[in-house]
Length: 362
Length: 150
Image (cartoon, rainbow over all chains, first blue to last red; front, side, top):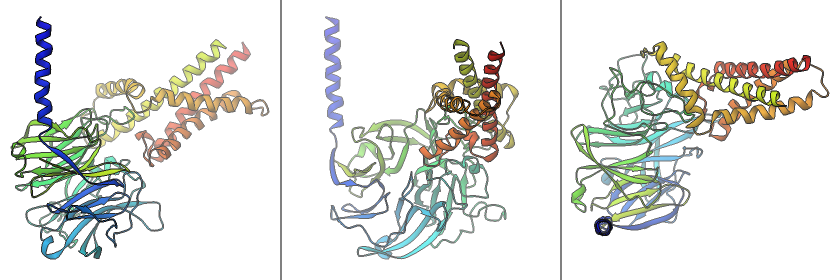
């Protein structure tokens, strides 16, 4: 008898869990996309997004234009490289400027690097394309570019620059751009207040260091949140601050893909701790802050898209602590990016050669 | 046959243990260089952790990779030795070195130029790993020579 009551209770509770999942609906805006990577929201019905294979696409009035935007820079589409991060200028509505991060092949060499260009969107073309940052030195690998961007409140641009996989130790040294957050002005010049600007032996664009492969960055009320892939385990959510060292690879909660211990240490004085880490890995990709009207119960949360097993983590933050984690949209596969629309709906880019752009609304 | 198999297994185990030692040392020495508080105890613990983890929980079990490399290299050497008259210990030493070098060089080709064995990223690292392959192969060749004498 007790067993029957128990089964009945489980079924009853499951019904509520199911109805909770149905609190939102999916709408596929575009499909058959070639590795969609970064989304930039113009307004609730107009978005730009990158495809890793090199195309910049636009959704106008909710419909994907069949032809990609012309004038995009030449990219190295290999491994994890390609046309990656995109962000609109804070004054995009008046100046039509945007910024794109991508893996750029070095001419005549077998090397490549992370590059950021500014450009102006004119009808269906990019014009006035200008390089504003190029990571140095170049790399032989096609992995761990970072390539996400966010604006600080003062209008300077933060660019995430990954460790290039084979060059992980370089994240601890300041004479290179591996494993760093970069801060530049939108014309490519270096802000005078950058933390290491007065040191001759340091790359002046460096804002923070000791990062691995930063795949999400967003600024909320002046606080910079960034997520990064750990190796096997050890994915992190950090609050990034200027001049701080985030420890990779001297401290980590992850192991190398070979199984080897990269470092037996998880903390050290002078190195920052993540506000959350994931073991095993979830492979965090994009990140957005939700404060829209459509899902008031999610207001004030960070949304972190994840590739493994494929979902979005809603993280409720209190100060510098994550106080709640909820798994959302776990039936869509690997999710490469997440963005919020002014109407409160959420945009998701699913990963892969047949990726989709999906809107989540009520 | 049984003795040969046992010696083959031992040479694979020797190579695996040495590769893991090099991987551990490469990570630990760098940690020391950035003033991380590495003690002898931490080094030993890390090495033994790696012995298990690199064979049981890594993306590819290292011992299996070494075994495949050595089996191919030793087989080719055995065939060559039918026509070429050189010392078995030297011939198998070269085979062991070639096997490890092939693993270190070919693995990145399968992973977008990424060195999954971090200890093999530098030329020095590749040289040390190749030398460890040489030692393991030499052990196998020497054991074959001893059997022939006996």
